[in-house]
Length: 156
Image 1: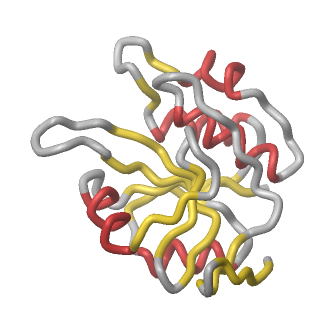
Image 2: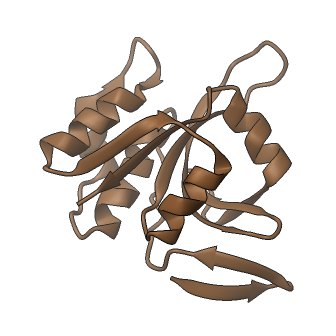
């Protein structure tokens, strides 16, 4: 881990977490591909999507990503958590996939972020379309609450 000073913000980030740009509707496979690459086990997002993406759902279940990782001999932790729990995983050098909902009002738009840092102003995550985004704690919590604060940690 390293400390960065970006525009006078103190950030704690896990070094070397790659950004994998997602294909439309395939944010889950992109997030999981990033994590697996981080641990030195490159799997393309397309290959992961072949096994976990559901055309019927127009997305990926987090449990299917967990099963994919386990089939590759990774350990996992899947649950509902708090920002403090995310920070504990990050402090241990483990990036975290979180389920969020970026929809508006009654329109749901499920999405996955890959969280790999935090700081005074918020959470640092690859969004699937943009690397290294900072989400204020209030915005992150609002998006994450809509999914029951669901997270997946994958590690060797």
